Image (tube, rainbow, N blue to C red; front, side, top):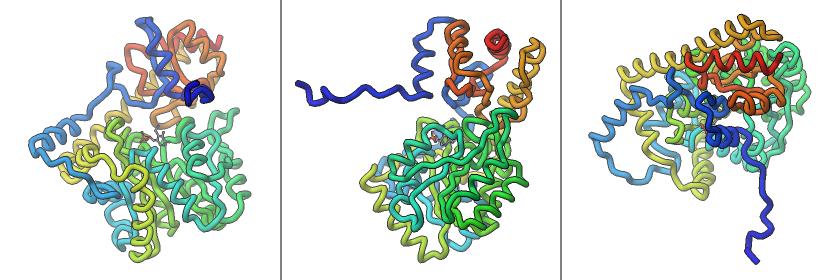
Length: 401
Ligand code: PMP
């Protein structure tokens, strides 16, 4: 009898499973709106021109393939921190920001939650918004944190349940860990306003909670790096000691390169040194040290003022294409007299839109129109383009009528 005879079959990943079904479909009209990866106007994966330039620079330089240090490429982590916090940010200037390279945003979250499980002095419970990115839950649990939730989404208004969110965060025991999506909330596409972030900062401070920011979409949400970093920078100004996860998957299109960072705001350089030492102790047995290529690409771009300028234009181009698709989809749904209110498609931000489509309608779209999305009704806006947006709107219209 086989050693693995008793291994039970697990369920497929709810997001990556959608792609499997899409691949198996033979229809020429098929559309994959499941996975959150940017597509250009032709529906193709997009390599940013600045990334191509950086590749060329790196290829000409032919650097060796030696191991990076445990916490990654120092040039990269410095530039990543400056991008998120700003060059003049106090924790950076005062040399009290502990930061390590990570295996993209997922790895950042994994290191962050594992660090909290080991060293957080309060209750090892993390509060996640409902809904949240599906992977937040297993990442937190596998790291040994208990998962609780706070309200976020209002089904009736297809908007933010700000009162519910505030009430739940207030009701959490003092010193709780609160995970916040810094911008472009996944899956809803709904963010607090700047005024609401200010209120949230006050509540978090009053309750001595610990803010844990996941920023997977800086620049990709609004097209503006600074605007998307508002919440993080405001919390820093307010003196919060926070933890920040960054990813370069979306904003540089470096998905498969797995390049990200996680940073800890410390009280002093001496404390930073202690946190650094524990980061190394945590990471060494996990994967020893991170991959080098993606970090070199990012630092090649961010260390050059010219390439950085070009990159900012490219990020805005991606964000703008998505915003344009939101307009087109909304207009077409209205033109077709599609039952329901669709204004949220335009007001939501970032990669995703929470359509409000029900699971049965999602199933019908797959069956009848070869259109694939997750059963919560989330669509990846990037999967839409001028060639398929009308077909998508017509199919949705049929599905809800
Ligand atoms: N956090 C959120 C909210 C995300 O949407 C994603 C990507 N889907 C990630 C983190 C991590 O992505 P990656 O590991 O590819 O950087």
